[in-house]
Length: 202
Image (cartoon, rainbow, N blue to C red):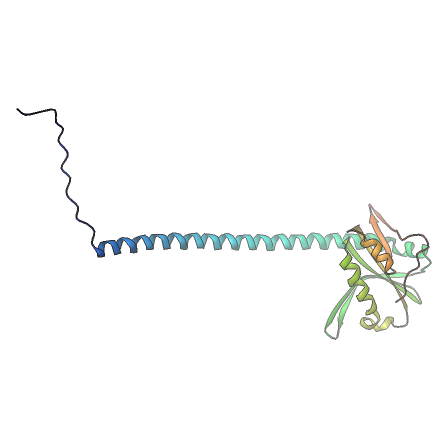
């Protein structure tokens, strides 16, 4: 007697085992897909890296522009008060010049502000933020001032460092090097050396 309740399994075509050529083609296709994905990922990474570099370059340009504009602002602020401030310290300067620059035997040099009278002159380095390296660099540069600018060879040269903020104790470092220390605040500037300070002649 037939049992009508037994479910019949669907007929599925019997699949033959894959031969070497089929496996090889599958491997090649998988490799191709992975290679394309890797190349696409690498391309996107390179594009992203390029974008980061371009963005970083733009940020540096903006930072340089910002720093440059701040520097010019501080220069103007210091220059306006400089003659009065130096006269209060016994340096009777009569005129100031900005941006003395040139090239001496392949070496470029630049001095931000120069204040001059008959026998003396004060060279001012201006920084928005004064750092210890700035003090060292300016000290080395001052020793070469008469070489760079031989027209001033017969003058007594003093140094001054002007800034808005000082990193660490760089302002005290500047004073120890014999420089006038000028802090720009608000709409004016002032010499903030300790009482009894004597500037160093170069």
